[in-house]
Amino acid sequence: MEMEQHKGGDLEEYAVVLDYLPTGRSFSAKSEPLVQLMGENKFTLLEAIPKGPALKVGERVYIGKGERDKISLIKSRIKYEELTEGAKKEIVNVISEIIKKNEAKFVELFNNAGPLNIRMHSLELLPSVGKKHLTAILDARDQKKFESFADITARVPLLQDPVKLLAERVLVELKGESRFYVLSRPYSKHMEEQHR
Image (cartoon, rainbow, N blue to C red; front, side):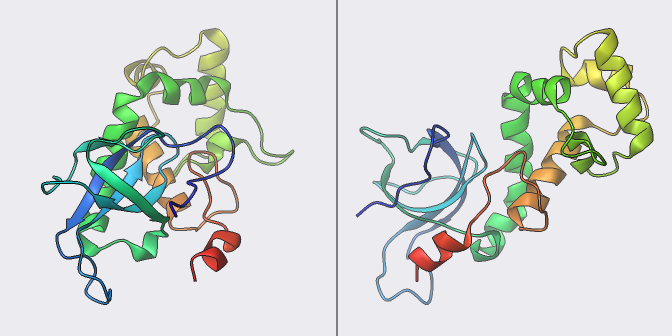
């Protein structure tokens, strides 16, 4: 039976190939092709069985409901630690490409992000964004909403590349190194127990 990706309205429709294993994992009892994927919506890490010929790293595939042309079955959701070394080498590039292709969505994050609690703003979760950067971002967006990553960079000159900051944050969340998840969906203990 195919694993349900996750509850709610944030199902992954498309994913990007992180690694292709023609004979599966070395410790697997069954020798079958296996592909490791990253969802484009919530950066969900998945393992799946492909259809037909080998998939290329970086290839975009449909994984939503209905007929899939390149993916036969989503086997399971996986943790960062379960990625192959090849997938780990590709992950930052894939995250960055997903962010660039969905620029409007991530620019809106800068425009609409609010406080997490009375002491911390959600933008402070981005690496190297402290109180000074936060004040500069909030002042700039109060004057006029951001329109693009280039606009953010131009109007908040002390801030590093927004794509790089977002990609670094996604990686922190995927590794499970945070209490807060604003860009990805956390891998829950419940899921871990389900897959044993």
